[in-house]
Length: 299
Image (cartoon, rainbow, N blue to C red):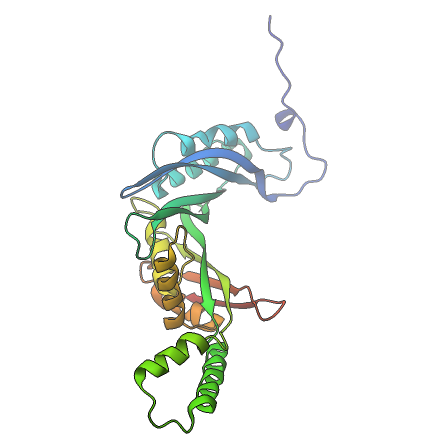
């Protein structure tokens, strides 16, 4: 005869009678399948899952129930807003004996995408985009937010103006009295002297969070990443040859930006989202030991 195993979460009562806002697990390893258009890839996610515990006398929730329900996110089918909603509803239903009404999950993973070189045909490399999904079910109301982090290059407009002034002054000092200067001579001087001063550039980081439509067929992460990269215009590159590096230098020169410029570009470029959007940009300064940052939002 098999002995009945004790379950103290049911048989014992909490000595301190307090409701709890969230109880659950954090950092669960889980495979998730992302499929959007031609993109299809299984990725390693870290998942947090919790429900509320409004009954003050209840000793604890049923962690194993939540853990098993997360298999609904790891099955061999793409992760969608609909699947997230189903899992959250199941989490609430699984804790009816705890009077739970709310549930939430948070997924963190790196979206691995192959990106082509700027100009060299058939040259490409892989880029990793950190993604966070936060889904919640509160009193039956479903909400889903996606956050994407992307690296880009920023060249300081002030530094560029100061550099141009120095080059201009050096050119005038060398040729102030030369009235027969030809374009070829100017070009030759620039070849040897145009880098007498160079503006400072730095690797920068944009984090964008948007609300996703609960009825959407997919998460729209690739479209969001594309919109971010198009807005800043200078995303960091993967595989490059000299022609690609030159093209990247041209992009930086044509898109000088302060941290404020980058934040505004992103806010104006997030037309793919109908909901609220939050933007945080960080320029990891090469001039200073501190960083420049900006936040913005679009309602």
